[in-house]
Length: 271
Length: 294
Image 1 (cartoon, each protein chain N blue to C red):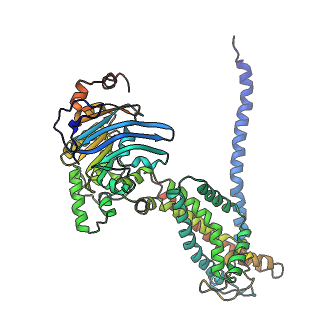
Image 2: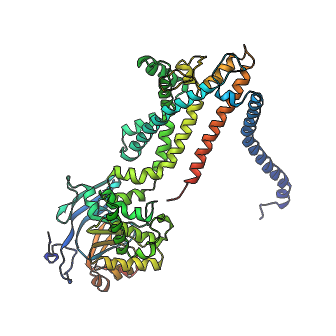
Image 3: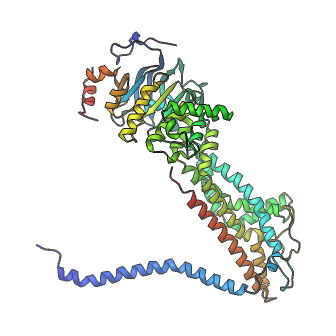
């Protein structure tokens, strides 16, 4: 399943300087329409495992649409049509007999606005394991603790697991949502502007957490904050008008972009 | 060049302010009108019922003698009626709402169902009564029993439950559904564990309003042929019965023969109104208590 990134068949990809890691997502000629609007145009992207891939670009460039395609959440909108392929671990996610539930069990998602359930902190984290059939209280307890520790929020909530999650601050709620995501033990974590609703201090905590999580998970993060992309990601894709303009190692794309449009965007000339 | 003549503006000022005050009074009077009518009605009914409304009146069986007549049978009839209406509308109404909101894709068929639910809400209650008479009483051969009355009433109030449930299901924020789907939950798991718990207070409010409507409805019961005088109280859903509004109806029309029946009707109205006010207050309480933002 591991396709080498060094094959270099992608036109937008320059030479790769990092060591090759196995591919987790391989997008081939992906096109997506909302009704008549052509939102994604011939996207080709290979995403490596156990790394942070940032997707940047101005509003309406298709970055959110792309990340929501990776777990097929985009299909919540009945007007959506797609062509092309997205391979997750070598399987086309649009395949007829690939259940979305199966895909989403392996690919977790953290959303723009913290969205805990109106349930207790414990029940929020235990939700995923429960829907997948784990009923044993003891095991659930262990999963909850492990996930909350994994999301660096255990110490803050360990004495109030039975309180409603709405009593937490925005930053804590977002880390709870990350814990809830970890509880299903996913392979990939998709993050759609996870810090855009948070204050700087909470943002920093989430960023540190992302750095920590990439040891065990493949993380794809959409952000409108270029400094954030530069700080936390290994590779960065720049989207514009539904196309991938440039996909490169983060340190390269920010120091020496190939495309004039990328340079204009990261230097703040538009967007 | 100055267009605003300050003197002219000043001379119109009094008039403008007068009309401003007058309009406020008019709107206030309109708002008070309904309240005054209700107060007059309550006063009229309560004053007529004084001396007749007692514990004995609530616990005695029906009789042609106004001095010993009571509404035990009518109260039990209404209770048994609700034993049918509650579960039937809850199950049918909530399931319909879940289908329309969560599963149905926008199509002509969906629009057709949706439109007809609205139409159903506009059908006069006597028509439901005739439907009940034709289908449940005659076709199914049930006769004028609680079950037939309850099923007829259920059809009548079903649209209320469907619409209220639809609204509260629709009000469940999309980001909660997304969170559940994002972890690989199926649609049914998401509905059961996330959507319904959040929508439940709204659904209950709709249920209570539907039940209070059913408690007060008379026309369908007249149509399915509830007799004027039923002495024994019903003890199950297969018994013949009368209900509170029916009792009010018959006592009122018979008061030309026996004048005291009018007071019995007034006392029954007080009982009926108390039940309805209580139910509506519970509905409002539930709505306020669970009116949270997600």
